[in-house]
Length: 263
Image (cartoon, rainbow, N blue to C red; front, side, top):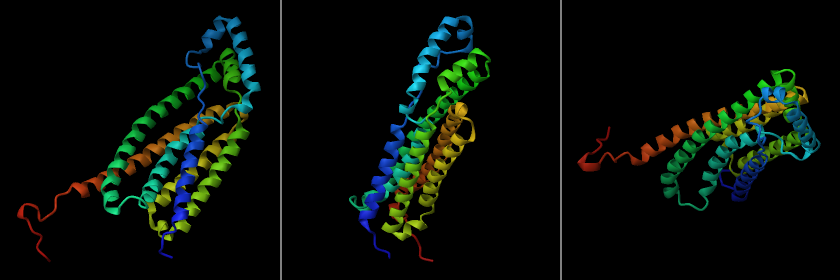
């Protein structure tokens, strides 16, 4: 029961990589919307007509568009899962002594990058959310612009993607348990995987909470939630990494003639 079943650990690492790749591949931010405002359409009806024509074509191709921002932002959380499982898998090829010295520095650098990058992404999603809400509330031309640009959402594709991701995450967790039951004693790893599963549920809930014309708004809210969760976990990982680094660089008590007296 205590032996490590390497094939299942490798499978867990592979599944975690596939999960992140699927989520990153679903990233699709609207193009050229940052300069739009309700006033532009009110002052230029011809611009509105031309815009609606282009937006109608986009609506017809909605089924081919990736399913929103929330899923792609979930990659920020699952990248942290990948790092944690990847460091465990690295023990198969990296000497334990070397891994113990390098792990803290790798986690520290990764956490800092995640925190800085995620802050920018959260503000990006927040800006898009404000734009969509402003357009929707600017009756009538702003609302028309919102419906034309954001009033469609590939909710079916998002549901299918979320179901696939949930299946892969459950498979990843099962592979870890089969590989070594003692992984269940690693509270940080267990809580991180549970958080990833909860993120799936949050996005599914927000996508199904409102009518289809408002899903783009709740999807942006989901993206912000994913970013906040990723930042919280990155801070926790950073704290653990700093503590690990301090243990490594802490001088030996016997250094410079000092000795530890036995109690």
